[in-house]
Length: 546
Image (tube, rainbow, N blue to C red; front, side):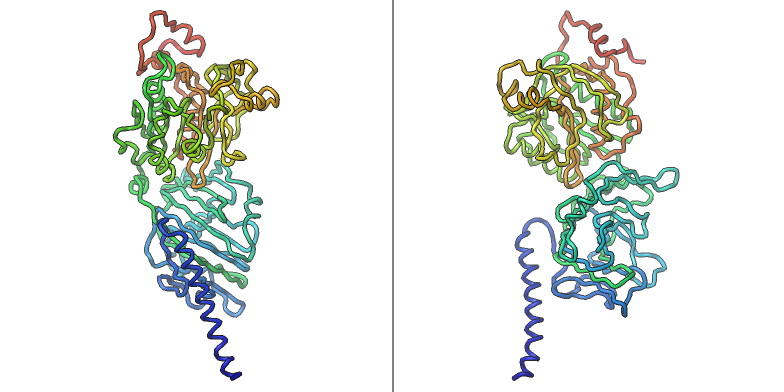
């Protein structure tokens, strides 16, 4: 009987471990059914994967790579998924590491003249047992560190040399590191859309990069798991799920121009105010003249009847009336789909206002803030801007003052997560002389401005967890203000930034705008007493194009 128990116990334990692993994978599959992800590891075998059997196996329902002092690897070795090349995708998995360094290879390639078939290079979502590299994007045999932890980077080639530009931050590296568990299970989420890559660990964005290095970047390639050379280590992977994303114009045509679509609202306030189409046409013309690599298209009178105009868009700009009649409200699902594809979204002036609830929640997700009735206000006043954040949107923008209908006390994401204020000023008490009303005043805004003297954010940039970008701008009631070079440049910079285009050092657009150009494409006719010289003096406009 004792011998029988000795034989039965190991078998029972092994069956129990298999059952536990199966239960974990089945529970995961049931939980995420219908989300578009496919399980590419069955939890029991290495079927569908190819790696050196000296190092790779399945233990406790997890893919396991392990080296020991007696069984080291000569160089990094990889377990390669045999499902073929992947292009645009999302990958989610759980990992645990004890000692050493590892990573998840994607869009990768076999190394030439390698010792065996299990050596590859390409983009790598790195992680380690230490405290520095988990979450970075490393180029295995492929340009080195492409984005450090906490970094947003743009990769280019300049004069034949690889260049990595740090354009922003997704968070403090040390703070991100504290969210990563040691010798325990963590989740890794990789998103690759066109040439924009985002890494997340345990739901926290760890880095973001845009690869504009046309000569070296890769649109597709192999998926693999790394076992690093060096001291003994053990790494495990489970719950490996892959969702292939649809190809976009940028993937199928690598050299295609970036596309910006302007959606101009219907006629509204009269000559020189809320000139949605004239404003969009002017911005589109200025943008394309300054950045020929951008393609622009302007749609007038609200949401496009032919939605195919939005195909391949890298950024959508809405300049229209808002509130309950906002043209986007019947199309929240369509705009949300664009946002999920990484399309940048820009909303100007009244277009930043939508009702609280579902529309407002979408605006918080898309661009980080919005005008909420009975919370925000819309006075006409002169704002003064002298201090700007270190952000691509402020490139080349000089201090300026301008009178407009500057909305303020906007509703922002909680804790301003992912939101960067761009234009900020403290409104004077004259902006709150009206009685309380949905747009004129409320106790909360009076406390913030009159009592606590809190500066208000009138324009802001936002990033989304998937790497998409948004921008809100409350000015733009007065059409003539587009003639002010800093006012105009800041918005042009923002549109280019939201389209994931590198902003020139001096900003976008240096050409002077004339009053004659501002009067083009307006919806209404001027009154007989319209004084053009007053406008020229106020905005310092030349009399004609140079």
